[in-house]
Image (cartoon, rainbow, N blue to C red; front, side, top):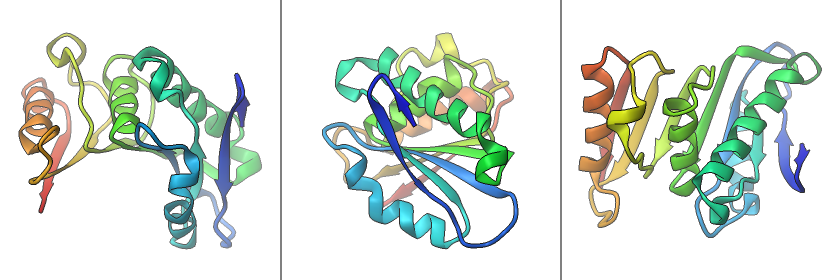
Length: 171
C-alpha cells in the first residue's frame, strides 16, 4: 500500500481460506515498525494484517483519511489477498485509535468492527448516531490521560443511541 508516500506491511496467514483482516494503526510518536511483532502474532493466529502508516502528526483529518484509505485498500484487494471483505476490523493504539474511532463515528466507514486501545473521540455528541460499526474500547486504570472514564463516555453515548460498544478496563 502506498498512498501519498504512506505504506503498510502486509502479513498473511499460512492457511488457505478467506481470512478475517485487521488494519493496525500505530500510536502517535511511532511508526509501523512499532507494530511488526504484534502483526506477525496476529497473522500466526489466522488474521490477514495490514500494519498501516498514517499521518498522526499532521492532524486528525489526515490520520483518519489515511486509516480509511488503508481499509479501502484491503477491501479493493480482498480477492487477491484472500480476505473476507465482511470481516475487516480496524485496531488502533492511542493516536491510531483516535483515527479509527473518528473513521467509525464521524465518517461512518463500513467495517466489521473497531478496536480502540487508549483512544479518544472529540465531539462524540455530534458524530455518534448509533448506526456505526461495533466498537470495543480498552483503557488502562493507571492511564492519567485516557482513563476508563474516557472510553465509558463513548460507550454510554453509543449505547444510548442504539449502537454497539463495550469497554474493558485493565490495570
